[in-house]
Length: 161
Length: 161
DNA sequence: AGCACATAGTCAACCTGGTTGCCTAGTGAG
DNA sequence: CTCACTAGGCAACCAGGTTGACTATGTGCT
Image (cartoon, rainbow over all chains, first blue to last red; front, side):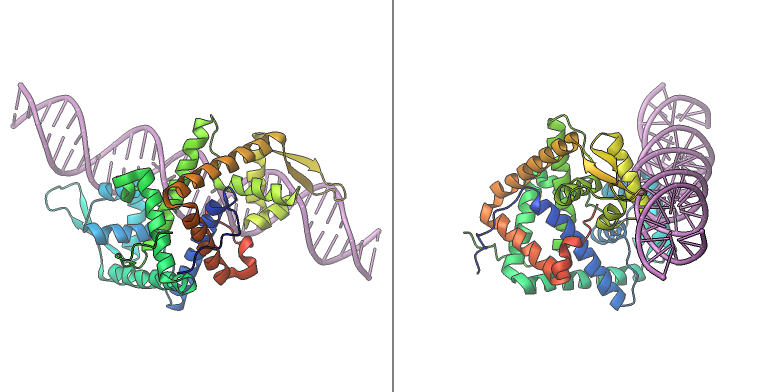
């Protein structure tokens, strides 16, 4: 596999700035692909709700708020939107009269599967540029940084949005 | 140099999610370092203002707005804050009575130099984990993606904040 | 059973950081 | 001089969060 170009010394802040730009570029790329499928982009916060519900199964608003690292009210607002758009449904909690159970609807699962496929295409595009091995190395280096900062807590870190 | 661990297949969306988390982690890391120096964190938008002024020299609000990809009013608000905090100063435009020239103050330059140094430390931490070569490869792969999407326009892409 | 305390979710108001539409003062071409 | 345009600011608005308070429900203790 190709060795990195050694000619250019890394400037302070360069990688951080590139990071912010690439994140933006990837998000825009994703929105372009969604548009090609006639789908409106949802906000990253929405995407994290979908991922969390898919990984964990039905949860309450309090649990969702904790996962997204926002207040109950903010989680409630986000949920209200997704309910209105038909991506999430509310069910009574089996044992707690106060709480509600939130779950992805069929439509929500479809959107999430499409989004995963399209994110995969964004990453495939990138892998096509630099090689699967290099992108896997990028991923591993990202994980190394997160592990160094958060260890086992790293999956709890709220992503930027 | 070590070859990437081949055992783990990339999952769709994995790199994108890692991206959002690492960006968050790097920003938090940076805030921790600033706090160690008794400095308040500024918002990323502020940091981009500093960088732009430093690279380009004094500019007007309209030019700044274009660079940040926000409205004149938003740029004006951000500038008003930085003026209030003593990082930027306004001067009359030499030839246009309507316009003002914005420039970094000494204090602004000091903050920016410190911020660059601290971003360098964030990146050095990462380089220490994965190796300079690997981080240089990450940087090159980030650039490859941006080039593929924006070519020469890539430096004009507004970063996420 | 009753009570004190805690919690789930919602409401209204607020805040931040943007946008929009409009305004005044200034610019430049004709 | 006139007119179309621009620079920057004002006020109101919006989105997406927070705060504090509220009601209904739950829990644990006596």
